[in-house]
Image (cartoon, rainbow, N blue to C red; front, top):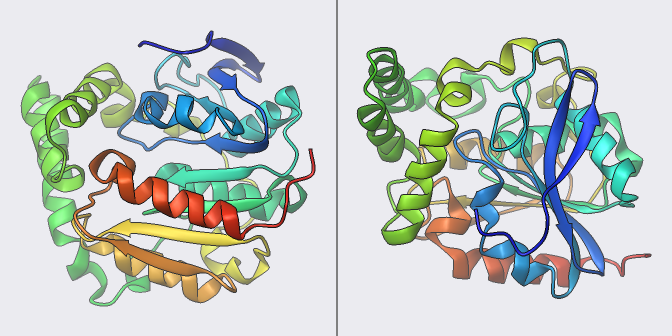
Length: 280
């Protein structure tokens, strides 16, 4: 990885987190997806650090963070990072599983979050019944996910990666597609075997039934070439979180910042511009 700043390490219960921080200004924390690592923000990190204090890190089992071997909370991991960097009410950018962590953080520690920019977010308590069509909406998801898992079990990483590409990264081309393939290859054991997931604990009740408790400014982005279920999930969240809007981004897949970086930049700037001034 070609990084503009040094990689740092944070001790957390039963493990360590690998992270980077840089810049000055309004704090922004970049989480990553469950099929990526912090490198998904290689383009954005130095750009944002021109005007913001930016932190990106690897979840347990991804990138430079070893997998969990005992019970842990990804929310408490994030709180530990906020404490280490003295980040006060940052904007949390949460794509996919990162969105799930961001929502759970906002519920468990509401005073630690300034705003949420969620990208095709997951959420704890997700249920097929939350989206129109119920389980039928997820049939393609289940078929391709099973095909990817079966290919991995058979030792066919390339085939497994292609199934994930069809499911989550259908818009990627060129260097963005190569980065996706590299991140899947490097994180395959966590992606397909969920080494850390089996040790994960949750702070409080699932977010699905508590959305009205979230009081921070929230915006959701989702691509029109993402998994067909994701826009429905985004709308479910928006109906529950007061004042939340959903932006459907043409031509974007699940890795929205990689497939439509221009749209991501525009949306982020507009959202930051709508927020109250940060107190540093």
